[in-house]
Image (tube, rainbow, N blue to C red; front, side):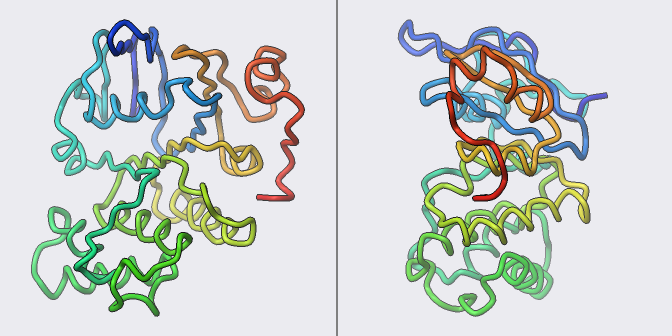
Length: 245
């Protein structure tokens, strides 16, 4: 049985069809990449999955339950957690305090909460920044903090919205290694939106391609990148090797 399943999901904004009859399934422990041109509906898809938007049609199921339109905080407590492209940490808090706040519904007791937060901060490579204001972090550090806040909530499914955007190639490597470890060590299911095809090829078990709000193709990375429809709509001549990931 799929851990996450979408059936016939549609969403419109003032007549503009952002999603059209989207079917998608993700098995437990799977890593699924979501790609497509700008405006294809990728972030809208995530917003529908996590409850930030209610679809106009179709259903979303998580762990066997119909969760269509359920509030994001309810879904997060159930294990469906996401990151955002725009990093907005609490400016008045340290890095560790930001992570502790995200873990409050997952970890009880002040001492355990602090310990859990520090473990996560260390895991994402921010230990030396733990007690410094979050606003002092560079872009790469803010990306790691966004990931840390998501991990602190104990995700069963982690939705990653362009977690590599703005990072230099050398800064991407540790993040990619950590994401692979989340599946291998923790069994976390990952669904990620990404424009860096090298990262998609490296991480994904399957890839879902959106175009104009609809699923254009789905398959293994090799199958998708060889599909003439995908090449025409999105990939063009973009290289797909992992050399620059």
